[in-house]
Image 1 (cartoon, rainbow, N blue to C red):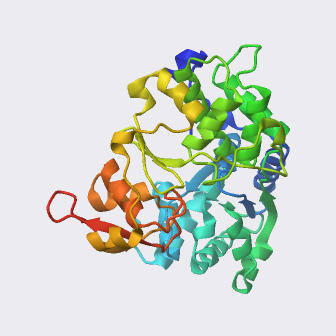
Image 2: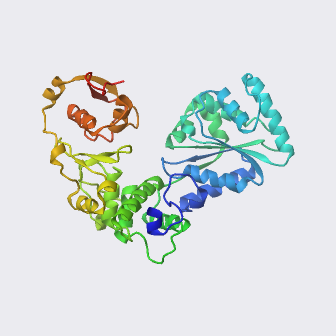
Image 3: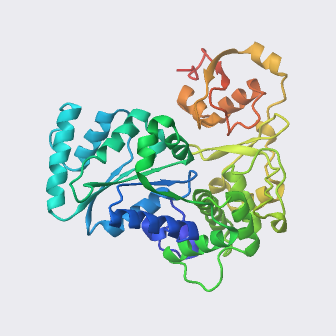
Length: 418
């Protein structure tokens, strides 16, 4: 529906790291040139660091695409816990049939492969993604891979890619030898407001948008630049949701109101703060929404709002009620459904009335995730009850890792905790 409405061939703001959508900002051009230079020059080690969502993987795929005529490539992204896992993963990607020997045996097998590969005139380029998660012993094993060489050249070029913690980890004294062997330290910086606009336009054109008129208004672009903080993944998330809402509203352009709603829908904004007017948004000053935040259940496609008063109201999904409900929601920010409203209950009484148990939230979990994991579903009445007996939750969609969450136990029905 979205593609047809905006006359696009494909989704311009998807999550796949497609090199066609790589936007060559100043920082991305510099990083790409550095990586290609390092590979062509046989420098051995090079790193690429950036905040999450900056497009590291997309950039790495572009590097591998450009060198595939002259090099054999391996992309390691799976969890690697030990040095033997590292060598085994390399051999598997290189097509080895037997990877069950000792570390010494597998290293000998790898060396044999590298010598044969070098005889073909093609180098081996190995990318290790999410390298900030590697243990020190594994990073030391990565350093040892640089010992595979001939008197004239390295047999393997290694690119370590990761978040900012990778740079911090490489500063540790135990990894001094590895850091000394790194020739180039590439880094991706967030996009400026102008680059954000160009990034959006680039992705739309790749996806087939050929109209001379801009799909996003200037005020909408200003909001996206501010709220996304110049991070491509955030830009994609906001734009994806904005296009979806725009198609439901049957709007031919995406204005600031639609972007505000998209930001609220994806809970990009912080709970309980005020949304700035378009002319107040810039790179130094960013404000966020005052509307109640909610979590979306993908299974039921219904929305649960969390007003600051502590009560909860339900609103039907837009797909069920049509564009009119969208318009009303945009005006009122959330729909009062009196039949579903729960009266405010003092926390002490609510907890005393129920049998509860505590679970610890894991990193990145939302209240919806916890509910679904423990009850096998996430029915609105369960979520509302959890919110009621956990009044200390400031934002049910952003829960701190290790935080205790009280869950109700209902032995009389099917909502028993697992």
